[in-house]
Length: 115
Image 1 (cartoon, helix red, strand yellow):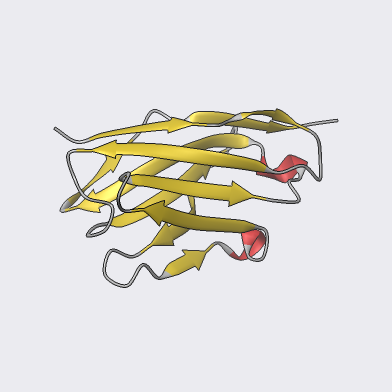
Image 2: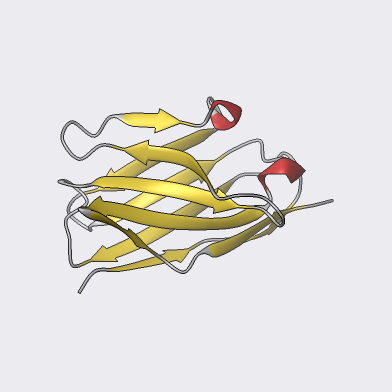
């Protein structure tokens, strides 16, 4: 059974940093493509970052390039999203997902950026 559990969200001020974590069980983050998506109120879900299985190559949404970093810890089977210089536009529920034939999803963690 595949499970993904996000943590690390919260309320921060503009310019702050935050690290999201995703604990994964039932599949290996070193083999499968791992993703971070987000969904803001009234907007469609969008992929923020991904990291490929083979090679661990990252890719980012243009609006977060240079601010967000996706990484993984193969030994702990964890995926992370480091977010810097946060703005109000980054406010959303952030979801971790894994692609293995179908996309598996976590339940999400709320990130709110507000002064």
